[in-house]
Length: 449
Image (spheres, rainbow, N blue to C red):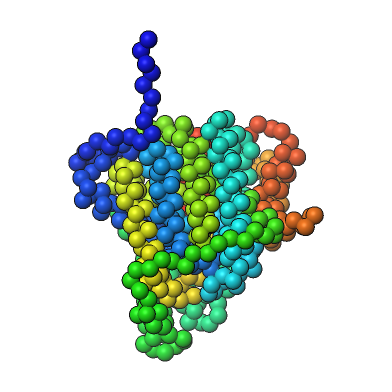
């Protein structure tokens, strides 16, 4: 009997110099390195912004984004091209769980890390379930009407904090608005790869305006660069361990469901881009993302997720080689090992962060509308309308449930409340096919730009 040939864990990448580069192909090494570095640039704006908004150390976050990308690469056997960066899904719940003020280091990071680890463990369990049972049940549990509502809540829950960040003075408001407008202009009018970097370039524009007004014209408190001069070029980031608080776990852990829905959409989108069926890799992708999240939070980093920004880069250059992301992961690790690089990030003024936050939170909220429209959610159906209406107000108002010493924050209440209310109101079959979930490829990220 002929022996059945089994697929090796990692593919053998064949050299190709022109045209579309498939996941199991590669460019010459020099070009592979350049494209990998380019992917780090694409993810940088969002991956550096998320930890700053939550009061985390950006050096640690970027370091673990590189580690996480390599973990994901091994988990999927080098067959799914993707970069793992800081997940925006965690921002609202981390801020709620730690009562973070929005500026400076977060004094309760350790509690947040414990919550992120538990979310990662739940996510890993989902990944194992998908490996054995398939992914369609996620679409059944969280159809587009529910996913869209929860995504909208994540953005709305943070609206007040974002607006407050640019409202301290008239100059702060001007800097914030310049940042917002620049991001918009680049997203709408720029061409090619520049269009994929609106967060990074918008932040630079706001930074320059603040520098001119503060350091040259003396309008407000100037940017201090002593930290950059005193920082070493090379050194380990400030790792931190977790503590496990029932309050933080109750607020943060439910995000695991959103991560699964988001990652599923990303993988479906990548499958369309590459022309390959990646269904067999979905469970391993979930598991890889979950393990990367647990590893990151164990050392003081943020939760991580697949990045729509890097999908945008692939759509432009049509280079899908997974080896590119090995290079990107290694380069991100090197950046994370540079305290001077981290010191530069920490000089970003508050109004610039506030302006970027308004854009990011707004994009998260607006993505809900895209999910509903592209999934053809029928709001003339009272079941859909009431579910969304209740969940939006409960989540935006940060409805917190407390029972038996356990606390469930606004995002968690909205997530579980949406699922319970939707199925309590009826059992009509209104779930789109799992393939339709590709519309969520951009959810929680800023890859729509």
